[in-house]
Image 1: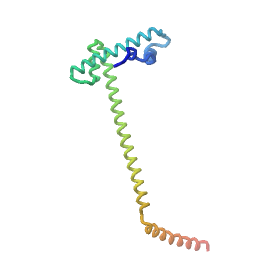
Image 2: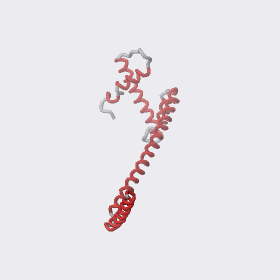
Image 3: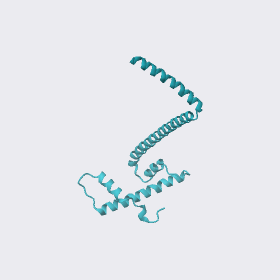
Image 4: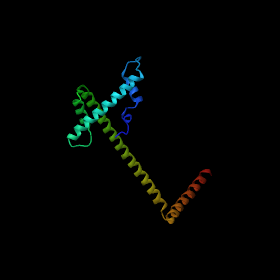
Length: 158
């Protein structure tokens, strides 16, 4: 819980931005009115939270759900806000699920990249672990080819 009653107030900057965005241009709101709206909004949030918590407790749950908030809106007689709030919650759920899918795809991508990196490192390690005899034999064969190439080049210039 909050230690002081002021801790329960919404930030003035947030309230001022909401007020500014909801009113037509050129309308000014006094500091006293902004403070009153902020306190009223805080009281509304606390009341809605309390009603939502009561609904959750009646259902023997400790977690308040979106449906509890919708029920609280009806209990508080704010029925006209239920439909827009429900649409907003469904939109948030869609965005949340989309974000989960995006994060899953990112994790799969990272795992594939890690596996590729490990495979490359393993191949490099296997190459460096080859016997020195194998490397010498391979270089001898390459040396003979170089001599053949030099002979061919020498023949062409003659």
